[in-house]
Image 1 (cartoon, helix red, strand yellow):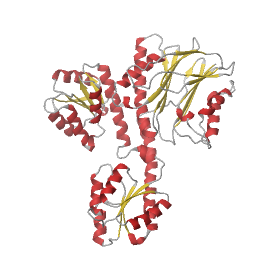
Image 2 (cartoon, rainbow, N blue to C red):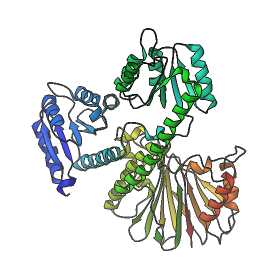
Image 3 (spheres, rainbow, N blue to C red):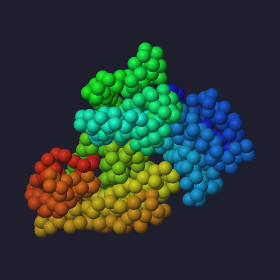
Length: 520
């Protein structure tokens, strides 16, 4: 690892032996290490050095690990700093408390070096994603195509209703609060895109309200407009000293207010488009691909995939292919529940676990079954306190070119569709396996399919089955008939894709992913 790429890890533990053991493994893998024997020394190193990840014991003399973590996470600068507890405690209550105080994971003593290194690598990669994308505002919220929300705070309710009427007429959603206190509560519970506030209000005036907004790290970035009868120069200057976006005199009328708000929202729209572009650039820069660019080549089979993100924003579907020795290939299709960037972030983490599980299975030698792969992934996910809270489905298909068979196992996924070319019949192949990370044992089983020439297997995510036409009907109701009607000689992926796009008029409700595996 080049020196400029080295990551720094802070180890906090009053047990010198454990500290040295962790140091040994991490230094051998190219990390910079800082050691602390307790919380006091830990704070000094954290504030004085550039730390990329913290490994911390729970039971320490001067301050326990939970309290230390909570204090660290209260500082906005360290909100997304990866924090792992290394402890002998591993009950459900311990996991819950670790998450409550802002921890990312727990590694149980005694630990395996491989587990420690894998979790460190995964958490550092997540930190890199956060660093590149920023954390001021959820990207998922930023890209949501909903009506822009305006919060109007004014004690003159008749005038407030007049402005509300004109804002709603212009296409905005407008919430009204009669005073600063209620305005603050509304802003916290349902963050608006713009805040418009009067200055002259009883109890708490507009200037004090603006200061309350500034003091809240989650609200201070929201554009703020003063709408007031106070037009004196000193009032206007005081408003701008508080970092407001604009200052509007009430006598200017509702049309001016609407024009000001519209201009601000148009400006934010341009920033959002820029953020989308930066999101893709950042993904490219760290090679965080969750869908391969090319189809795999495997004798005896034609394998293709189609993937389209929801409105161009990286989402939760992921696809991967692995050579398993000379005769076998693994085909992976997963779906993190949720939409847009948050799901993509976890999809990237899952890809890492799947690849790790494949490597472990390969080391065992012999033929590798889908069940073995899922068992290994599930064990890793279950012990990752952060990732195990995210519901994810996974389909694993292993094809063999010598026997022309396919073995399948799934975790909470949609059934595979198998089309017999000779009879034209389409059957659903279901798996009873649990969602990943839900239980230590996911009850995964292998299902074997014998394939003849032109037989085809379809793997898909719910973005396809749940998309609707103009009448509100789901494509799932037409899916089996669509597969039946595919000519065995034609390209099954292109045929089903064409029917699906025609059905939905090209308007999808989620990420869509489809894999076809056709026997030659």
